[in-house]
Amino acid sequence: MLDITITRTTAPKQKPDENHLGFGHFYTDHMFIMDYTAGQGWHSPRVVPYQPLLLDPAAMVFHYAQESFEGLKAYRTAEGQVQLFRPNKNAERMQKTHERLCIPTIPVEDFVQAVKALVSVDADWVPSAPGTSLYLRPFTIATEAHLGVKPSDAYQFIIIASPSGAYYAEGLNPVKIYVEDEYVRAAPGGTGAIKCGGNYAASLAGQTKAHAMGYSQVLWLDGIERKYVEEVGSMNCFFKINGVIRTAPCSGTVLPGITRMSCIELLRDWGYTVDCETRLSIQEVMEAAQNGTLEEIFGTGTAAVVSPVGKLYYEGTEITVGNNEIGPVTQRLYDTLTGIQWGTLPDEKGWVVTI
Ligand code: COI
Image (tube, rainbow, N blue to C red; front, side, top):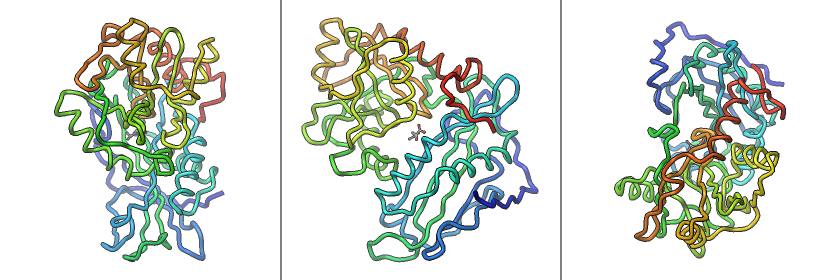
């Protein structure tokens, strides 16, 4: 159990208009920080006023990208309560990221306690307008000032919070996706299955190309053959083909999304066959679109929630999915998941943690 000290701001900020939040534009009054020092471990957990960081320019995070991050949300229920969705899963995933990047791990209960502490202090920042939440961004950075390549001796674990609305400007309208056949996001043995900034930096060239062509996101193919669908930069991707729901297996190059695992569980409860073990080739997707068996495509993610995909572009051909409208399974998943998160549906699975 952490002994968290709390220093409240003396200059609270003005809160933004809840109906025009967008994603990731505004930050609350406070932040959580905890330090790691070799020989001492994680120490000095504290909630302090939101402020810039003071780091040595030689801090290793700037040079060798030893960094991890997570994303989760706090939701306000109609009764005014604040709740989190499966925060222990974020804590467990961050441990895996830290192990892969040689960063000391943080106990699951400490991570969850830190999240709760910040959300409690900034509780009046959890918005209540429909479709809004307080997006939480825990991250760890290597802070030792050193230019040799090796694991850092010092780190900071920080949590910031951002009142946010929909991730995509499209909201729940279908997004257009560009299938990238030149750049790759991940390769076996690499870092595709963990959440680190480097994965996202490497995705920007593909994303910029996609944007220039009028597409909002990139669908990545496997790094060896550029044949099998993997994930979209900010979400996992599901395909309903001939009644069966398929998504890329999490076998080392795909991020194990918490929304992904929750959707698979819900879909199986509803009696759908979900195949998340067999790889799906982009050729199969294009053929299913031609022969009329491609029923729905949707993405899942904490920020993106459940987002319908209306168009897919691959090597000169653009296909339209479900008349470019949200499909029934996508809609049901969105309604059920957000119903549990905002407390309008019962939490039969014990996924919700009340603050
Ligand atoms: C999230 O969904 O929380 C993510 O971390 C994706 C992010 C790149 C917006």
